[in-house]
Amino acid sequence: MTPLILALIAGAVVGLALGGLGGGGSVIAVPALIYLLGFGPAAATTAGLLIVIATSLTGLLAHARDGLVRWRTGGLFAAAGVVPAALTGALSVRLPSGALTAAFAVLAGVAGVRMFRTDGTPQADGGQPDAVPVRRAAGAGAGLGAVTGLLGVGGGFLAVPALVTVLAVPMSAAVGTSLLVITVNSTAALAARLATPTTLDWALIAPFTATAVLGAWDGKRLAAKVSTDSLQRIFGAVLLAVAAFMLVDSVA
Image (cartoon, rainbow, N blue to C red; front, side):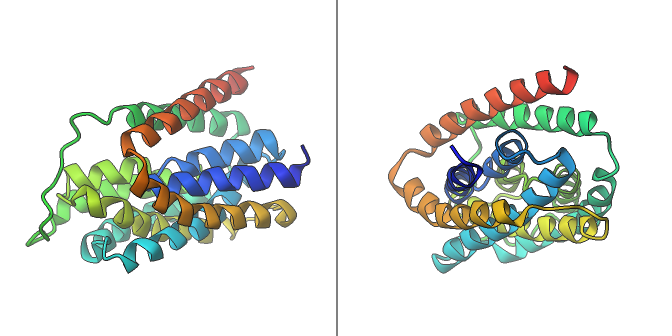
């Protein structure tokens, strides 16, 4: 297949994951850019942020239209991650390619394992919390922002559990709220990265992003029809395979 076709297919998969699960798709985007489209690790993580921003914003609008975004909680969570995302975003482009690939492999493995751990996830009630736990939101948000900036991923697979278990956001609103967090953190990280010279292949990034955006809309509809647990296990298996491949490649 040509690079253009590969970019279109990979973008659709990323969009489906982000739209349907609020995470996981961005962890697929970077390996796809590296191994399918020939990007270097630094360029791939920067391009990944561009793709994640466009896709997450699309998914966010869809969830907001249905009233499934907790703006106050998500805003506080995201604000705490802005500075860490910018700092680690500037640092990332200076790291050796092997170290960046290995770190991403570990992240993909963690994401894959979390996708399989669907049973027993605490479910918050459906009511609006009276107050947002500021310290917990700040701590979790800062950690997520650092991961986003360093590795060019949205971190929804971390944000959704944190929103549910730490901040008492119901699962019905956790995906939409995570997309708000992802959009803000990814924008901060991208701004820091664009301050350093990075060559990006827009002929491949543009179609990748376009199909990812379309996939995000379809992902939200798919999530309403298919068991979330089933979707998570499918993407979890993909992520574990990606993690193993990248880890071997980083030490080869």
